[in-house]
Image (tube, rainbow over all chains, first blue to last red; front, top):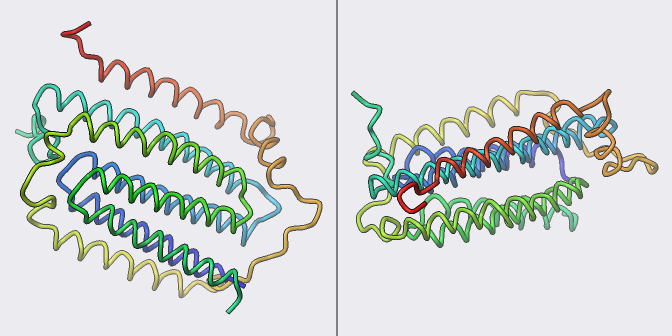
Amino acid sequence: MIPLSWYLILAAALFCIGLYGVLARKNAVAILMGIELMLNAVNINLVAFWRYRTPEMIAGQAYAVMVFAVAAAEVAVGLALIISIYRRRSTIVADDIDMLKF
Amino acid sequence: MTPLQIIFLITSVGILGSALMVVTTRNLVHAALWLVVSLFGVAVLYVMLSAAFLAVAQVVIYIGAIAILMIFAIMLTRRVAKDSGPQTNPNWTWAVVVAAALFGGLTWLLSSWNGFSTPIPELSSRADPLSQLGQALVSPNAYVLPFEVASVLLLSALIGAIMVAWDRRSG
């Protein structure tokens, strides 16, 4: 059988790959993709803990559903912002979007 | 090695390999397609964890909606997507260091926890996670309030997205 540790290590690796994407990529859409990978790693952890530790309670799955909803909201707002910035400034390179810097 | 373990290993290699392609490939459209592969692998994991509803929701929401939205956004900003030059920050080595350190720290921390290699418990034969989840999401004793708050959050986020992306010059 598969022990819990396999899922946890896979989720940790996926989270770190997503973190690298968020930190290293220039393009704002690619940064959002890294965030999606991190959210998926969190969801794997939630469902694995539910299945291995408390299969009689449903809290882990219910929380994963909430994460889905929040991820959808985050992507919708994030992409709208990116498209709006692209229309005004013709760039979606995160380093060039520095209007709030002073 | 049992067949389930082999399936798990193949799936995890697929997930991690395509996730690496997502964060390293230069062409953003390819990155979005690799993201679809990675998300599909996560759906397979949900099936292995007997979370059938989440597997279907993963395919419908993540692959069907979020990944397609990403592809649309990439195509709308296409001139930049084809940008030549490096696709990473100049200090990307620090990102590698941070990610590797976090992975090492997480693995070390988890391996010192005594529940780390818990074997999988049997689901009782009359337990039905799907109907349990459905009832928990609408039951006042369980998660109806977070569920409704998440619905309102999604609605307001979508209206906000329309307002933010509205092109005022043309309409």
